[in-house]
Image (cartoon, rainbow, N blue to C red):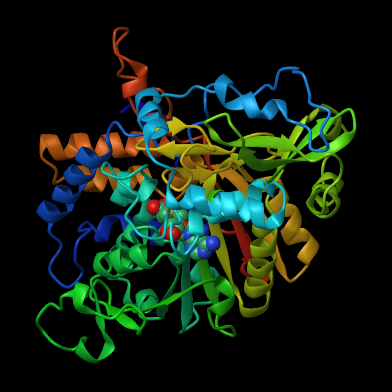
Length: 522
Ligand code: SAH
């Protein structure tokens, strides 16, 4: 348990909050069902299953080996200059070479055809943000829209897949915030981009015994993917409200996705929305965004002798590659609006050094909406993601079947994501000045440590078999550890081992000023 020593124990927190954490960790041992008595057997079976699904799989936040350095290259003198960025992917560590080769041979996909027609329709290249948005969330062929992309059989794993402790700790954070909010008797618990619904299920199970809290919750899932909505319904063991009193379990697959449902895990009402703006206002709100911001579309800019230009996506005529990056000949609408805004927040030193900048206007808009909502209605938001507390330079990455692949190859078949610019999020909260403040970011190991993940692990280990204990400890290490696993031998291939997420992933809170400083950020 090399990771245990790294996790800071709770320090400097109010006694009430400390008591809450201990109570939460001591009482809610079962992760499966609050209605049955706590069953360690069930809980640990879950931990083992997760270990099998996820132990050697990489998470999205692993930075590719090299920050991309774009070499000097010959430029064409056409109006839209060919960017050196066209060759950038070759400098990246691409582990899925064989998979790539197979995709290269495959026929052009519906998504590739769609992007090409979009470029033709526009009469020129599209922005990276448009490309990313189409690839991820196009209603017909978007990456997230029609299938389960998570877990061993999918494209990548996330923290809730790795260990139930992640969702449980987020539940502890929400409960503590609820206390700081003055224990309101009705709370909207919103999750942005809930994936398979695993985090929410673990949160509801973990907090179900604290009925003072759990009975105040109505849950709002913000999800654009019909396929994932239906998986979330199953994960949360949903049934229609009118069948909720029935004693027999309800087949959640038969429920209609659009109507409000009751989760048989905790009894909370669950509803789905396409975006945060559709979640009703006027009620104190707790918002969770885990690995949501990284999926929001970014614009990419590059410094050139002509000034800042925008990186764009064009059809790669004749190269057989499908698409290529090109540079705008000069400033674009996005560079005048968003790059200028981001640069205002940067230090002189940062501005002098940086050659590439990513800006995510959707993240800034979402943050402003969150800051207003929690400022006016009360409550707070927790953002956990991989990212940096400075301007992000060139982080857009594609992952297919747990391997990094080229961003422009076979669009729609791989996840696209970018590092989160936490510094910009903080500035967006400040600019909004809506009665809320940002705290952090702190690294994931510090955040989970402050919430007592080590106490939780110890409690779970008490009833665990050897195999179950291994699963729990591996999951724990992956959430809070750093770099390659300490148990790797010299001869082991580091590529086949998971990497710790403790410092790559960070937590940031946006909280109503009435609440004070949230737990984990003192
Ligand atoms: N939070 C989950 C899944 C993260 S993946 C986890 O940690 O496991 C991103 C999630 O956000 C998916 O559920 C995806 O369908 C959803 N998503 C991506 N872009 C979205 C958008 N613009 N609006 C709503 N949901 C979106």
